[in-house]
Length: 556
Image (cartoon, rainbow, N blue to C red; front, top):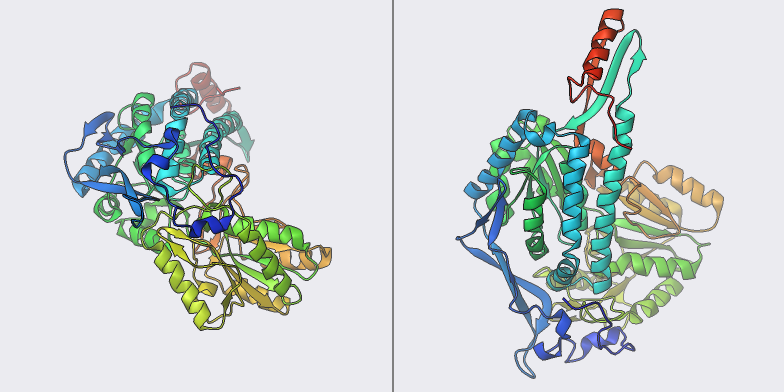
């Protein structure tokens, strides 16, 4: 892999570039350092510590980047690799390996000390960093993420792993203490849950997947990991790192359709922990397959329909900048994206005009090009779905405020600023998860409050304004509706030390660097009455190092 350099791209492009016939490149026009020579094929899986060759069917992986076979030809999504289409029997082999490695809590991995588990995770992080360029390139090709954002996703994931290691040391120090309460001497530690099934999303197939996978592992759970439907190929370079960094059966990787692989795992009843980032309907269906759902511990990141509320006294320059970034970062394909902009009617016309201008200034192009903000979309059928939302809005009285909004070129969908949006339009209710910016004009705060309260989702919202009394009042009314309120800023997950959760159909459980360690563990207490004999017994156990659980050892 060559060192990172600037690609030879016209730096003066605007978003109008998307409409040009040569928007998608010919193969020879792709900068050499970004070419996937021969594609990437994953023909192995990791089960019980073995990289097993897959001899069954494969799924083709096509990029949102389209290529023209010849001058004047229609651009077609380029084939960039293949991944195994595994069946339920193979998935169950992976689960059996995880169950055996856990050994009902007596396996080697859950019995390791915190220091030992940290050593293995640190080894994996070192191996992972050696594959940075390959992973970044595959993020670009498979999901259309810009090179800047793909690099940021990788680096943020590495930082998250480092922060998790640090936070576990802090947690371990706190857990090493004894307390005496009500005549009882006790020590409480966090121990693993059991076998975890981890599934991540396609929009952040590395970062959001690893925010559950790494905490699950480092807390002593064994894992069956299924990559996202898109963004699968980047796991290929990491398979060997998983194998060499963890004992056999601790991490098992399966590929294929969820309906073929995940159903049998859940029905087996052997999954103790379910980490899933996707739709609430998908999560509910999978949880219901478990024969004892009351014993299934879950952490779920689900749908969101985050609104921005722009009050009459808002700083328009700031609100426009934050709302455009919040709505269109990675083409709006983020659960934390701003999905509906509620703007006071006194500002609505000017706000829409400014947003339209800002959208027109964004650069559209291929993921490897310099300063690109808008790229093709990875989901098959996505442009058709987005177009249907636009058509529905127009049929009910909305207009497209920006030049070229809603037009399509292959897998590219040009962002559409839609105004005025009303309650009967689909985009008012549906999470578009793409480059649509619907704007609603509201007259009084009661309309805004009603919208947030009536929504099925409650992840986050943003409020833009300068009046402390008005802002404070809205905070108090809406704080019990969402997991996070952002003042004069877009919705976002970071920093990773802050809780990431939601209400209603948006989430179950809380994730952050510290919260994730708690989610993937159970508090277990060893207690005894505070008599001299019992205190002597505990002291002898600790000093003689007769127990791995009851110990005062900790890491600095």
